Image (cartoon, rainbow, N blue to C red; front, side):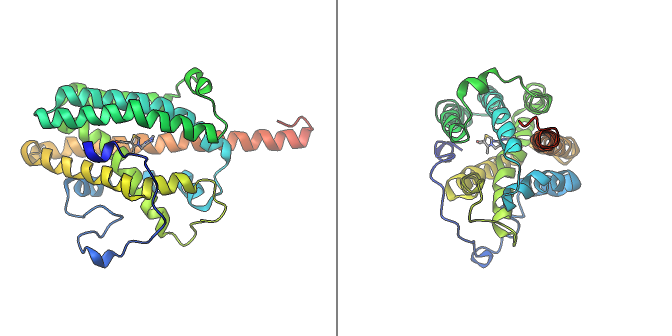
Length: 270
Ligand SMILES: Cc1ncc(C[n+]2csc(CCO)c2C)c(N)n1
């Protein structure tokens, strides 16, 4: 995934709808239906749906997500990205060959030397300082998810690790692509449009495509039918933890709302 990874979160593309007829294999939200990833996604069923269909995602699409929810999410995502980078460091160790090591090392480099800086800039636009993110206590949801991924990699092989990472890497592309197809997608005056454009753009699409292809390559040599149930469990667990991450952000928005209402009722304002 090296060439794409360095372009991760790069320029966003203008909003265009893809013509599904241009590639008949491309039926389902931008990821071909015949891949190992698609098999895992199908097996995850309701866990996948709860992740991609979370209320937080609806709020991004409609532009109605409370800003406190997004800010809390962004702060935790900074901590998430640090541990996510550690998972790529582990992928260097667990790689099958030199090409796999180069690819994982390139992604690690892109994450810590490029994406983290972009994330800091993105957060600055939302009024969040780097100091605030560094000092923020890590939420249990962030800890659970990132350490679970690391544990799958530590106790398993490179396929276990890449399966645990897949809902994150490929899921965000699918979520953003699905938002663009929604009839209630708000494009004008939606504060979350840059986020949606980033993850539905061609640059990020290439990163997600690389991750799907890499899973197919690894599955060809390592995924026996006997292993499939355990791999499907890992994937579904990662989907549940992604949904938990949305839920964490969502709750911060609800808390903010309650505090705002309480402030208005009591004149104590916040
Ligand atoms: C909770 C959470 N889940 C997924 C992503 C998306 N994401 C994180 S790193 C990365 C690039 C992988 O090469 C992508 C797509 C996120 N930001 N936060």
